[in-house]
Image (cartoon, rainbow, N blue to C red):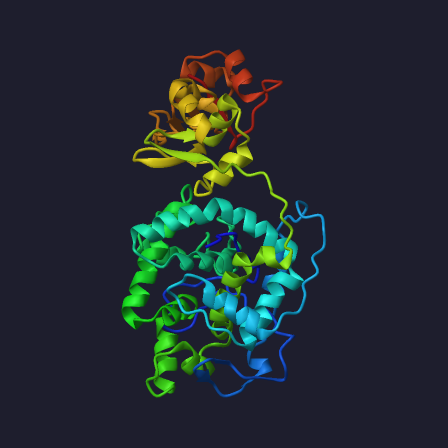
Length: 430
């Protein structure tokens, strides 16, 4: 199996339907190559015709997503020859997958949008997949799940671990904060493990397992990942209990009808991109990485400047640290280029001390509360007294009251003369 890679820059709007357990970016892509009526079918299935307007959604999200993909690495245009249906069908059936990959006119329309209309974007995500897919395979393998589920984050985020939806979903797998926490991800101001490639993939595997156990069918589980199990159960009920994606197809939310066809088309596109002449140019990415565990608070800039690693590269490898700070206090992961791990270990003390007061020790751990003084109208905080001037007060009298000099009071308050005004506040230093 050639795990070349795929693209789905077609990100769908976050689903908020009843029963939804995860809002995700949804991109259904306008199927303008379809006829006015589309018959969904495979070798054993012939579903009633579905009107075109039920398949088409606003492509604003899709357009915005592909605009973020750098295609400079691909310098040539791609000319895609029209192929007979039998070729697409045979190629899909040849893929060594557990999850069913049927072919029909809807799948064909999405394949052409990948390989014909967005070849440079497909090439870009193919290169990103060379980094992320092996990571997905490791986690999917540990959970004994089909490896082809690795195409879901392509649909969800275009393989961008820092992707955010307008509804608040984030990361490669597009978890909402509540769903992320439900599956063990830490989400707060400093750490957002929805954007941690490994931990978010672990959470996605748990979520997908629960969906498969619920429906006993991967196509239905994938549909539920998009629209929530409540909507899938509703469609099953409306389809007189049929438990097959293509049988309940007309009763699913509009964006979900396109979700599985996009999944199938993405699998085709990344595995057969070379046969469509997709641009082969590579992009520069750190491919060999290693992860160390640390419980010490530190800033990515400390690591960057001491080890000479670009800060943007560290951010790409560690997207879960929203403010570039590893909080410490418990064990966190730090992903580094593999050849720099030994350097980090050898220079850890230097790294942790570098600009520490500026970057990580600048938060006050304790603040004294203001305390009233024995003198009427005064209070003190952190050893500094603040005195509210009363009618009849003079600098000399105030200085004598606090056992300081007039010159000191004027210096502490930036006074040019001895004139003071009742109601104003003077600062009396330590």
